[in-house]
Structure formats: structure tokens, C-alpha cells
Length: 487
Length: 108
View 1 (cartoon, rainbow over the protein chains, first blue to last red):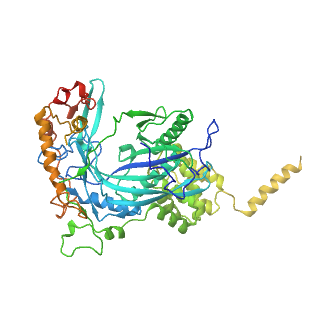
View 2 (view 1 turned 90 degrees about the vertical axis):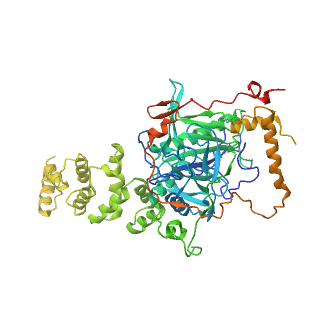
View 3 (view 1 turned 135 degrees about the horizontal axis):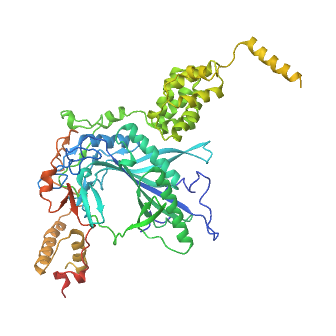
């Protein structure tokens, strides 16, 4: 059915959509009223832990099939779930980083459905009272295509819940069968539910990217989408200003942040086109086809799915403590103290960005890009330490020269043939005015070949030294003037 | 109050139980009647209880790898396997529509 009920938007201040490019989606060809796209996200992040959420089998990507499976994971009778402390800590850290209220008492439930990769016939999740609620995530994006100015937006976090991952189904269409690998079954997940506060693919992508950076900074999830550690489902609908929310569709099978933006934007346009042509939107699940760049209907949700939620009878409520409520005589290993975890949270990306701006006098846009590339901020700081050049100038070389080289050759910062030491060395030559800035770019191009030469060696080889000697310069100028006198 | 045919059909779909004959349906009716006794108690203002364990401490396990690596044991129970994978049909086999099912509900 439709999304949140009729009436004024619950989002209050955000009345008009998508102002990253300014204004609501313009009127369609028939001159109808503008459309407001509404985008919400459900994100599943695999918890970075040694063992699974309720069992002691290992969590590892790409292992021999069914080798990381315990009797509990295979749902053999007589087995019981035992909660992994590390998974709870990961969820608390993430909740705190996203400004959530941590529920000191949360509950586990069973969500029932039949599928070959869900051996128990149900998933243990937190439907009634999840571990964290009511948070927010701030993210930045460029106001226009020129990437000159950034704007900060916020999306509300409805909740974070702990739940089990399912196994993997490999479809063997030739033999009309499915091969099931339960290695992933039971791995801990944090489901992060973002309210429908976003309005386009770019916003969704920016929000997910920021979440990814936060999770990686916390270490609660490695959040690598390519390895299935971060999965995103998008809920999309459109409506006219002042009217109730439209029917929403759920878009799945999105494998990268880039495809997320494409999938959301495609689906928004598809819905607008459909409605403007007099059609209707079905409340369905659609899959994103990355090759064709479109969404296609996925499965027929025959009527409504009834998951028959019931309390998980084998797990008592999860109780968390803080400094005030800490019980006196309890085994430390059995106690999770929210305040203790809060005190030990690392600097989040937004804080790191501000510190870079403050410490080095660079622009917020620069700081954003430095943190957006893995290892780039550290590279920058390392160069700054080894050179006399002002950080404001250094950052130009990092972002314009180094980064573009890396991108052109699809290299990560770690794989850079030019180390921070070499770049600092080069920038020192420039700073001491031993070479010109044009010459420096030439040297960098040479250094890029990774032949082991130092900047100074290259300068000497290519005779790029700037003449400093006043007398010599005068002689040259005089020679040029003399040469022209004859014309 | 009898359980309707629609509800019985819905339950068979959801839980893949087979009420099969009048005895099965009667057993369900009796179970519901038995549970209905709970309504005789006034529970206004009382938090529902999920389980008698709700006051127990939820044990937290250390994040160590202590299980797994028993592929052979697990696959021993499987009727069909392919190179250490379990084999399943290509998708959920849908329950036949009410009219086509060979159960009590199908009868008049």
C-alpha cells in the first residue's frame, strides 16, 4: 500500500524536494504540477566480528562451501542461540555514532518465511524493540556539477536492529536447482533504517557513502559493497506537493554506490512517466538491472507477506547498562556499558574533516575529498610533515595532480608509485624555487613511472633547474634583446 | 465460533501444516478454545510476558571461533548434494490452490 499516511509531510522543514540542483522535479511534458520524489533506505551492514551472531562458527568471505557452519547455523534440532558480545558492542557503537537513543532493554523476535537459504524457516531479528532508535546522519554533497560548493543535509535514522544474515543461494538454471551454501547463515547484521528524507539518487548515494565511512572508522563493519558487507534496498515513491505520499516500490539488487544513484533516479523517472501517462504504480519489489540501467519487477509478493512475528523464546531481553545503572556485583564480561563505549569512540569522519580544515587551513571541499579516498588524508598529512610548503598549496598537488593520476590508472593511494616521501621531496624543490611549477609537473610525470629515481635526479637529467644566478640571467636577457635588435 | 475455511487455507499456506481431515481441524478448534480461557483474566495495565526466562540474564559469548568445519557431518543428512552444496528446488514450490489440494478443506 502507500507509504506514510495522508496529510502534511511529517518531515516538517523539508517541504520541497531535491534542492541539490535547486527546486522540485520540474513539471512533466503535459504541464502538470511538479513531482516530489521520496526516497528511504534500508541498509544491511555485516558486522565485523570473528564469529557469528548466535554461534561460534567463523565469519569469513569466500571459504569452501558449508565449512563455516555449526549445527545451530544448519538449524539442527537441539541447538540454541548464544549471543555474541562483540556484535552487541558493534551495534551500540554504530547507534552512538548515528546519534541514536540506545535502548537499554531490547528484544529478539522470529520473522518467519520459507526459503532454501533460511534453514530454520525463520530469521532472528529485532522487530518490536530494536537496540537503537531515533538517530540522524549528516552528509554533504556538491551543490552543482562544478563541484565548487558543498551543502550539508540530514537524514533521520529510524532504528538500528541486530539480525541474522541468511545463507547464499546459487541458481543452477541448467539443472533447474539451487545450490545452498550456509557459510553466511547466521552472520551478524545491523539493519539501519533511514527515513524517507531523501529525494534523489545523489542524496541516497551521499548518505550511504557517509554511513560507509562511519562504519569503517568505527570498525563495526568493513562495509565493502562488492563483498556483500553492505547491502542497500531503496524505497521510492513520488507525489505532488500537498498531496499524500504515493505508492512506493522497493528496489533491490544494487551492488555499488554508483548504481544506487542510478537505480533511484531511474525508478523516480519511471514512476513519473507512468503516472503522467495515466498509469498506476504497484506496491512491488523491483530489481535493478545494472547492464540495462533500469529496474524490473522482481517477485510477485502474492498478496501481503505475513511473517508471523513472535518473540524469540530462547533469548531473554538484552539489557545494556551505563555508568549510573552499572550493577555492582556482576561479571565484567557479562556487562556492556554504553558510556564506556561512548568514551572510546574514535573521531568520526565529520570531526576528522573539521580538524583538517582547522589544522591546515584547507577548504571544507578539500577536506571532504581527502577523506573520501582511502588513505589520502594520511598521505596528505605525511607530505605536509616532510615539506616546508604550506598545507594549502600541498593540498592542490594532492587533489589535482596525485589524485587524478591515481584515478586515471585506477590505483588506490596504497598502490601509488609516488610515495609521500618522494612527493614531499619534489615539493621542497619547488618551494626552494629550484624548479618552476611547470617543471615540477614534468618531474611528477616522470616519477609516476616508478623507476626509482629521485626528483633531484630527474631535474638534473632533464635540465629543469631554474637559474638563480642574477648575472647569468642578465646575460641571457641581454642576448635575447641583442638578438631582436637586429630585426 | 468456528475457524473459517479462508483462515484455514491461509494457515496452511503460511505454516505448511496440513489440517487434512475434520479431526485435524477439530484439534485446532479445541486448542483455540483452550487458549481463549486467558481472556477471563483482567490484564489491564500488565506488561505481556514473552517467556518465563525474561528475568534471566542474557548470556554474552566472547567473540571466539569455536565451531564449524564439520561439512561432512552436515552433508550426511542431505538427500542430494553437489560438491559440498545442499541442493534445493529452483524456488519455493507454491502450495496448490485450495481447489486443487488433496485435503479435507477441498471437500464440500
